[in-house]
Amino acid sequence: MKVICIMVKRENVKKQLNAKLTWKGGVCSEIEMRHHTVVIDSGKEEGGSDLGPAPTEMFLAALGACLMTNISRIGQKMRLGLKSVNMEITGTKEYNEHPASFVTLNVNVLIEAKTEDREKLERLVKLAEENCTVSNTVRNAVAPHVMLRLT
Image (cartoon, rainbow, N blue to C red; front, top):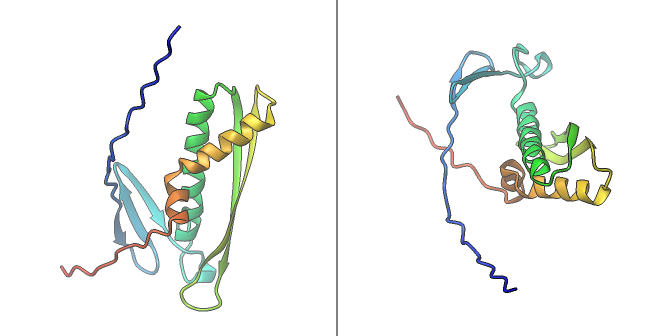
């Protein structure tokens, strides 16, 4: 029997995503993404009205949601029989000098699956991180290009 392996080169595809923000006073913003609206605000201890999660909390949530999406998709492909996936993400924000930034990001993943093969589950988490747009962006330190546009 002769086996032929054909490698298919993946095209470099770019997809532009958009978020439109409107200032709502104080430190509160309303964000529109596709057909969804989210309110972002800071807690009262940081000068906000606590009308929604803080931008830094949404950053942690975006990282977790990206990883969770990949765990679900890749777990199905690997036929691991995922029953439940829970995740807790903590970030340590340093306030020493302006600007503040996260100095640590820790992601703890708890998976319940039909398989009890730890190596397969560790592989799943590794693949989820490697394919996560948010973690790749952080890892590659992509700098935002911020510019003023007057109305």
